[in-house]
Length: 379
Image: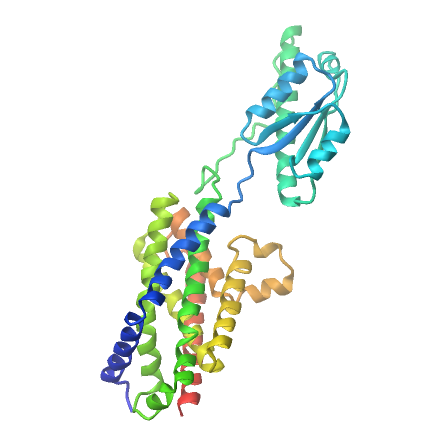
């Protein structure tokens, strides 16, 4: 028996009617991506700036005040308080009112003018190791620049030749020149949100048929598994693509993420990814035969891998080898890489043919699994 477009249209029409007859679920399906993107886009930021600092200035000279002014004038640090003893630094760090404490020792200005190498103590709250390490890099760079400027000024006063740094480093940042974390977080969020929405939409569809008893009616009809699968997919695929458009509009026009690549390439790869994600939801729904279990499996196999193992936030290269191997079967890993390439780099799909091939292979394999599982259940 060949594939029948008539039976396919009948199943698709049934699914569209089911979606339209439940406007609250449809509204949630369309509003949830918007809410998630706004919440994550505004709340999730890896930019480290305006770090709270307390200062214990034991010198109180023009040189120490110049150092404090430079640090406070940068966008990386904000001096919260000036304290008079070490206990106050410990108190502010322990209460999380400050991340960094800076101690300028006595004779700092005198040693600096005499050509010495005065020491400045920096105390960091290591409970947030990532932020502390970034703050340490910022502070070291500011102190090094201050020291270089002071030595240069001292050499000028003595009439000595101007000091030139041994290496003149000229940094060029490509693709994300402002180093805004939002520019690479939002494209990754699109992949995570689509994976969650797709699994949530389809993980309940077949299980609901079993629980309501309508699956027995479908089994009694001549509908084939492939026709049933495609008929159910087309309705949810339309909702998923609408969610994709919502995410794209919010990302470009609200979060101001640059879109350097081709919208056609974005559409093609989104179709492949969404098709695979929907087929995975159908597979889970067919295997579970229970809406609660199907929903739990859908969230467990979509949200956690897409959020943790896709390279969306955490680089998989820094993870243990076993976790890196597992990440290769996470489709969001390839979709995130493609989205960042299209949004930020403006590259075409033939440049990222490896990711596109892996994504296509995933969609094909999951489609075959879903069809076979449906055939086993319907037979």
